[in-house]
Image 1 (cartoon, rainbow, N blue to C red):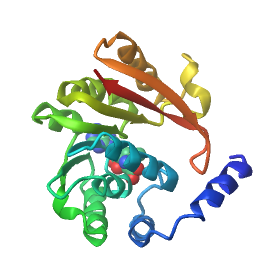
Image 2: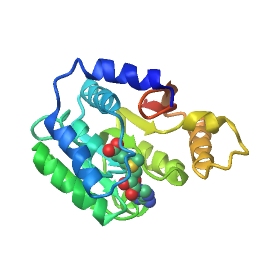
Image 3: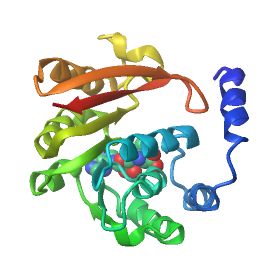
Image 4: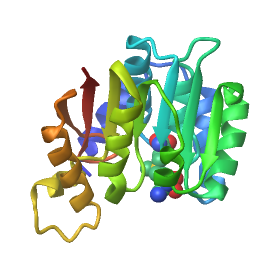
Length: 215
Ligand SMILES: C[S@@+](CC[C@H](N)C(=O)[O-])C[C@H]1O[C@@H](n2cnc3c(N)ncnc32)[C@H](O)[C@@H]1O
């Protein structure tokens, strides 16, 4: 990783007051042996801002891990808002539950453990904001469900779509690339969304978000 990217992230991060609950969540994740594949602090804030800007009252997250992004999104909700987050691994969900409780947002959040494709089949909307951040092979299925479950005006955000540029290589050996490429072909064919992809650099290296507005 280019050290300048991390230094710039640290520069702007240093202008914010320390967020005890978010820091404690990362520490708890590390203690529990979870992989450090949460969004970066600035990305969590970005998601929070997006969710608030659409005045989200119902948020769907696919890929909980330790609930780091979940906390940021749950904080964007009004008092009676709800967030449903889907996680394959019970051990990740247990860490997330403790992190969400410490952050004071657990009562707004439902963590559903199991393969997200199966959970989504039984889920009813509408949702105002969907964050897709789980196994890339299922991104096309997640996106199809997100469009089905989203209200007009909702935002769908997909994480890790650039993968240090590997996304543009159809012969990439990265097993995450085919799903990432396929979901963008689905986005391109979906008349109900207006979408764009933004590359990002920083402590999470070179990656990117795709943001789709449901028409
Ligand atoms: C990148 S992490 C999520 C990070 C989290 N959104 C954050 O920023 O704090 C991806 C998570 O998706 C989960 N996951 C992987 N495959 C899944 C599946 N088929 N169904 C549900 N969750 C899955 C993984 O166990 C992992 O916890």
